[in-house]
Image (cartoon, rainbow, N blue to C red; front, side):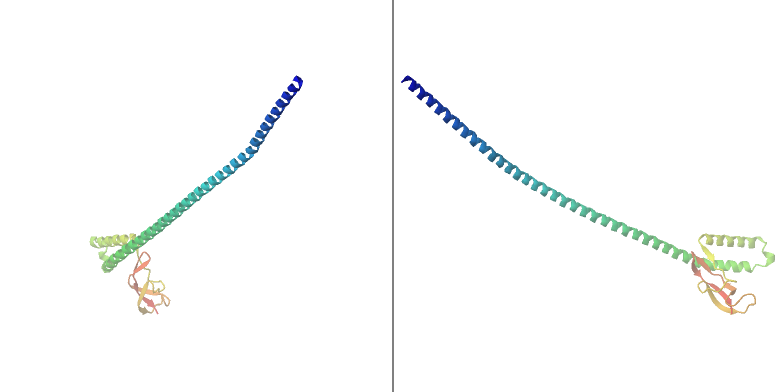
Length: 213
């Protein structure tokens, strides 16, 4: 009887051990099954967080790109405005210089036109001096003043227009009469009645001439 009781106790202990082992196995199985689910959840959460961060970064880049484009556009606008103002200032400067030159030229031309009759009177006076009196002090002084006046006019780019022996040119000469000549051909200037002058290549006064017919 004692042996039978001992065997029953052993069987009870073995059953308890099996049940404990079974419970442990089930717990391990449940924990092992839960781990992939938790890992999957964590992966999904990580993907969502990464996606949100990617969207935020994209928005930041788009905002930065828009801001940079706006700055570029503003800079281009300012550069264009500066270029326009510089071009306008350059045109204004050129116009001012041109107007200044024209005003100076007009004023100089007006003064030259008033001086030329004085030059004519000098030439007439010197031409009327007899040969025997050209050596006296007064005649020589008049000659020196005349040469000084012509030198100053030449420095101002005032030059006499060639006439006698030149072919008639209506741009420089004013024909007041026709003459017969054995020395010059037809259309050539044989006599200068009044000397003409140019100022910087523009005619101040035309030469009054007699042309061979």
